[in-house]
Image (tube, rainbow over all chains, first blue to last red; front, side):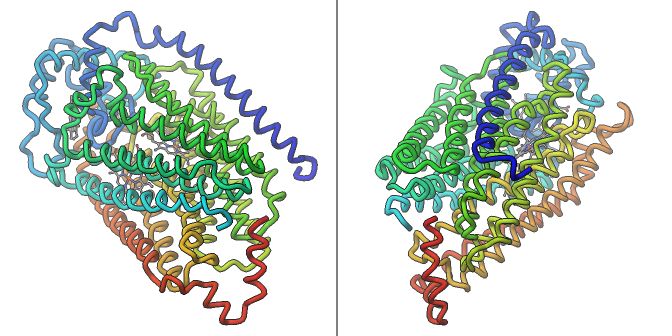
Length: 148
Length: 482
Ligand code: HEM
Ligand code: HEM
């Protein structure tokens, strides 16, 4: 093959090929962005979900936890913590999260620690709303089981 | 050194190595926290150590890429750098911003840092790898713009080679895709979708162009092989990298919301991504076999070949290992991901920066034919210690990941162990990782010692000149200027 291929041809494959596939990526992305609202149930997103995401980011929860499998691998996956710790019951989960956040860090020696963030009850409630909404996104059935 | 202005690269390389040292220290801290949750808690919570570790990594690699560009572009273009002064200003801006960011992470609670830097005006913080305050991100854009402008003007002014053209596309892409770091909509699925436009399109896209360009430059220099041979293959390699890598981004869209067709597209295209890495290995060894001159900087050649092999291992093999959707369903976000992340980042990007430093630094320090053999011995010892320890770390993390999946993900709900219970079982493997990490650190120390070994004026050149290798040495500069 090496002899048939000239440098000029190779260059054209580089610029032409990359550009073509970049356009293809744009097209696919456009389609995905239009389809996403149905897969993440955008209409159920409340103000609290958006606030919850801000609290999530301002405290860098992703620095220890994964969310939908992305982030750090030091602490439990949280996209399905609503199902794991709340059993799918919103009131139960909100109660759990208030309790959980207030007792950190746990006193168990050598166990991995989660810091105390001193969040207000409203902030924790927003976090709960965010995690509940996230748990319902259609993610092609990941993770394999409830342990995350 | 053919042009005075190439010397602006030196401080970039020095700072890169200092930050690399810091990165590894924080890696070791986290490695301990994996074993003992009370280690340095609450002084340095895990997430803070992680931010410092990964941000230092990215910043030192950027310093390395910048140093590499400032060094090689004038030489390739056959002209002085457009503005050495701008390069120095950029250097200080970037250094001060980088140090301030790391201190901010370490000294303030993250929420306080977000408040102080007014994150609410344009929220961009709190996402993996993109933890920097918004104002710092704006600074990074300014630094990148000034850097790309400076390099671009130099390229425009001089001879345009394939290496500089590919490097330029890579650098422009780096700057452009970073802009997606500023897009952080409150809809998590859209946020995640575009987060990968920074992270994936960097490491599996435009950075590969930068890697290929720097590696070609170093290989041409250490082998004396004609650049005509290199150029065609370089185009083919980067073409395949982008063609497979752009849609290959789909392997990150499996489980974060986007539709099912990404399972097919992502698996298919990303399965091709190892190909360019494989071609780089073939091409590097072919060039070294065809070496036209006996080159005295053995260390630089070792790094160049090592980069090719380790990039293929980390990105190609370890990437392919978990890239097909049915496999990734189980490995996603496990220690397997960490194994691949470490081997790929080290093998491809850390090593290419160390390769160009190994080639260029002696020249900038007035040792045109490389460091004295005593220094090279330390450097090559560092090479092997770091490389082999990193392979060990990746193997340990792969075992940890497989074990994690077996305990936590494969069993049905009810029988599966919880996350923390699983992690506690794996602790022996985390000990192995930590010990290998300590060996890696030792390798890094050997490597750094090599800079201080051998009298400053005693170089391979002068030593072997004395041994009457005169004609060969005299031929070197002529070949190098090709
Ligand atoms: C040698 C000692 C090192 C140790 C003990 C270490 C340890 C760690 C740990 C514990 C994490 C966090 C994993 C998690 O999220 O739970 C991490 C992340 C990371 N480290 Fe290291 N590290 C070391 C060196 C390095 C080096 C040399 C590089 C690259 C040149 C590197 C690149 C990374 C990357 C890219 C991540 C993010 C991984 C991901 O998100 O999947 N590390 N490291
Ligand atoms: C030098 C190039 C590469 C580097 C530096 C690199 C680095 C990384 C890092 C750091 C992550 C973790 C991201 C996160 O924290 O979420 C990752 C994920 C991933 N990489 Fe790579 N990678 C490279 C090339 C490749 C290639 C060529 C492939 C495929 C053949 C690949 C396949 C994957 C997959 C499938 C994941 C997702 C893992 C998961 O589901 O958790 N990578 N890569």
